[in-house]
View 1: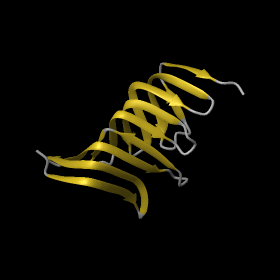
View 2: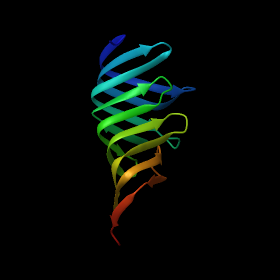
View 3: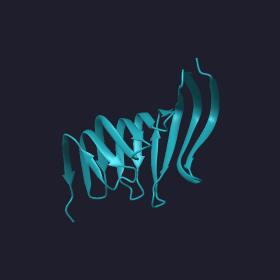
View 4: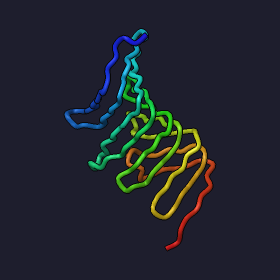
Length: 143
């Protein structure tokens, strides 16, 4: 049973006055177990990761979890769009707040202006400038 619930919520994560992450959802339920706390989000979520250079990486998904250490998980039709319009589609990601890395062990499709890469598992920095895909296959267009 949740300790509290909210509807149409926006959570802002900041550090020393600088906004790092903005999370919006239709419904949020906070769960506590001992010292641990997590906020479960559903009804569609929107996560804006504000990168160090000020650009924004946008994550949308059906549902998610914000852990008490500010790590975020997203599930169900996850779409990640970077500032340069690279798009990643998968079913689950986890984002570490400590090293600002996004990871998945699920099937992923990474699309950009001149290439599409598919495979199982990936990791990337928040800005999606440096990413690695595991067990990949793909296609590239020559210009």
